Length: 158
Image (tube, rainbow, N blue to C red; front, side):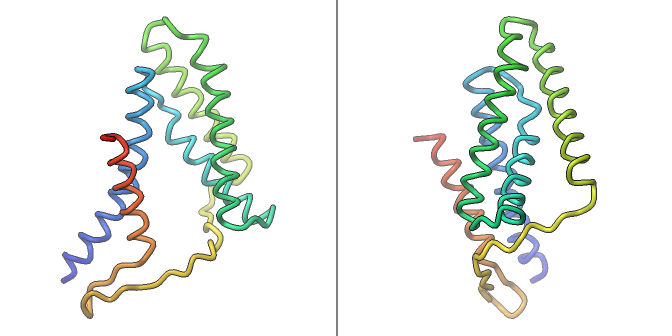
């Protein structure tokens, strides 16, 4: 039974990776660009939502939209100043530029927020536990993550 519980946990975490990989694949598929700052943009979004909820006292959904806007603006700035000037250059040049941007952003956020572990604020979404058997449970958050992953994957094939 422990194996089945860990399998459910692994599938949930795997769908988080799938959502990140779908975005990375779309960037490469459209621009033919290995965007190594892609994960850093996710970090910017997570910290933006956290700041929105913690310091600006936004509701979770408003903070989610705020994080999308901030991440989008950062992505546009990266494309404009780090990638656009290098169009037509050797692919390794854009790769190095992306790695440089990722390092710069990670260090800026480490200085701003420290490297200590931060707990994401309560979202207001009630977490309910679904008891499949006495030793196997799944939460509604895991189901939401899996559903979002399925929607993200299916949108690639539409």
